[in-house]
Image 1 (spheres, rainbow, N blue to C red):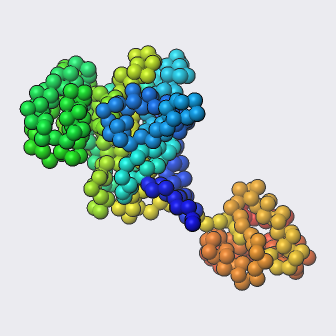
Image 2 (image 1 turned 180 degrees about the vertical axis):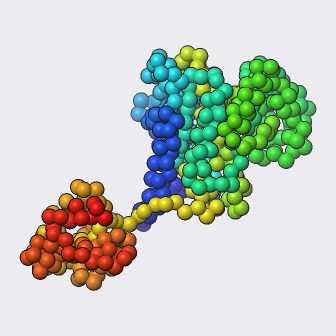
Length: 421
């Protein structure tokens, strides 16, 4: 019996992986422009990190984590998101002590959630995210949003919608929290068991419930924006001003609630409005988390960041019909005729590769016609032909596969010739 791939995972094969590489390279280029440095954290951490960092009332912690006990009887969990691990690393390595502040980091890597697989959603998925730690300046909120928008736009997406909200500081959230409890408590029995459990623990999470999203009380729930104190309101107005200054279009949605417990102040989502993208339109989500570093054992340190799925990005590109400029072909295919030429081609191919040319040759003793067909399949830009006559003269024939031109070139000059082309 053949072994099948686990449900909710995928093999990314040649011909497709090049698109992933292009996207990841674009992410790195944009992070470099914004001076964000890459950090790589373990794919599994102590379970407590996510319980404390993500929040025990979240769906991720309650239902979706891959958790196991190791041989030392320690509870470990495959990371379901990137922020908690990055902040843990920030604390572990005392990055807060660096004279270069804020600390600006990014990551790209696989995450794991046990959820129902559907279009653009997998149990193992790749997340790109950034974290800026150490600044309470609202301009860095705008910077993080600008980075995310620029990333999507650089790949050719146009049908984007940025939605922002403020969750306020601790004082604002406490006032809003009590208002939500008072609003939902008389009829909480009409809601799902998750909402009932969250009423006292974290009533804000009720607003993010997918089962009861159409309940009439959801439409009349108190908005956090009505409970913002002066500081929180002024902070949010500054963020909006900076976004306007950057010519970034956005809408304010008082009902936007991110699904993780650590958010406060700025919260945001970037959505795709492309026709045919699907019912779940969110591409990217993030926000400010000023208490998370302290929760994980570090000093009082503000932070803001976002995370996005590469899989959902690819779905959005497909929905908009965007073709990424990915070159999957080879530069040169070297055709050999005869045993002596076949031996010589080994060193010719190596010289071309060392010079930076993507080069291929025949390994199956194919006839000349079959070798040319192989070159066509590989979309070779140039075919270099070496037969016994050419070998005796110390030359090769170089054919431009687009123009059809063919020139005789000395073997010793081949690299120089192709470099000039």
